[in-house]
Image (cartoon, rainbow, N blue to C red; front, side, top):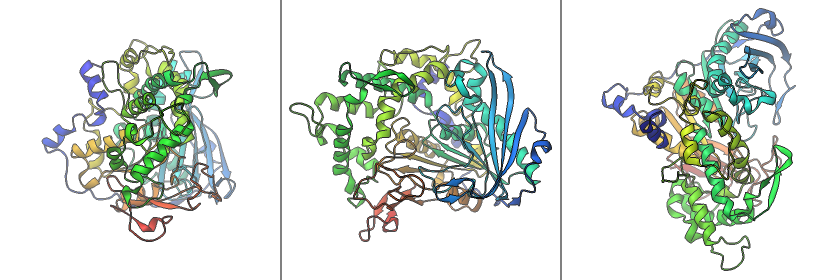
Length: 575
């Protein structure tokens, strides 16, 4: 990638760098696009016979077994009867001598709603997790529960090669985008063979790396999916990971010298205790200061900061948090700590001031355990492994606290005879070479729904908000008729934090795609004591265990109507 291209990428233009030209030339329709015809369902005639019945290219069906209703539970709800199909695609011997394949499982409901859902999984993939199509931070519902045929995969690698699959060139490409490209047509053929008809409507979604998979598919596979559910997308994952390394280097001088914690990936290993630079007590102090300054901006003092953007203008960590005059005691921050916190939240930069990644919004979820794990532990283990083995050309290990981030940045855009596609190219939505992709996607009537925890510590909610803003400025989202973004106040990475983190955005996405009804407010609930699935232990004790709030499409904010219980979403409006 030329230096000018790298500069554009660093500015975050991504898939939108040339859309202004398209708009100026009049190639983008400004009139509303009619919704797709709604899907119609079918019944599954048989299951066990699929093993011998299916003949799919480059695919081996290993098993097909009936699963009775209730044999699988999602929270306190019984998953309907379905057929579980397991298989492998493109089995091969890798250049590293290891055996590779794209492992998958597909769950086919006996009572099918005519829709297909590709479940994008998180992290470095590497395991075929149950294809339930789980949504939101808790098991409120799932795509399989709603009647979708759902596929899940390991993205082309499994077992002991994780994360070192990144040393194998084809495994890199499968992880980046090719596994989705290969599985999508196969899954549709499998559905057609099983039900006698293919899916009428197709959706793809996931959180974290799963959100990245969905976002990449929107750019690369715009003719294959009708709806995209994008959660906390790491769509600039290499840069986000490098920002973590940069952040670790900011925290390190403040950490207690010689203090260590256990390495969760190595039972016999230890890591520097970076959390001692900004302790849980100190983060709670900052969270309280944020609430003090911003909680009432939405009309209600309820421990939730709904007016995220207004809060960024109102809150200043240097003046709104007490400054320690003596020893650190958890109730204050030193001046040096404040400088580092402000710098980290402001976003990673190279030595010459060039921005690497987006800033992070201030929000009460900074006190969450998930926030601390990403900033202080994963920045020393998971991010360095991914950067060194998957995103860099050539693959080169690194010591995070000693790494030259400016030099590493150049390795993301490099290629050589072995790795012919750069880490940036294989991981992110194509942009400058294919500027018309999103315009074509919108033109055919597809929709994108995004959500992001405002206190996500690894992928910034601000990065997602800016993506949506760029779509709008490029003329691709008039009246928010193509993409809508739902920030989740208080939520950490995909779940947890002081947040209403249990919600279903797939149902509203389907309604938008197939009926033309755009989502504006979606009810979310907390996972308090007694929740049928899992309890969020980070909820404040003075909240109702059943508190609800509307998730509001950006830029509207959940605003208190002035009367009624603060625990009930019906007393708030998106304004």
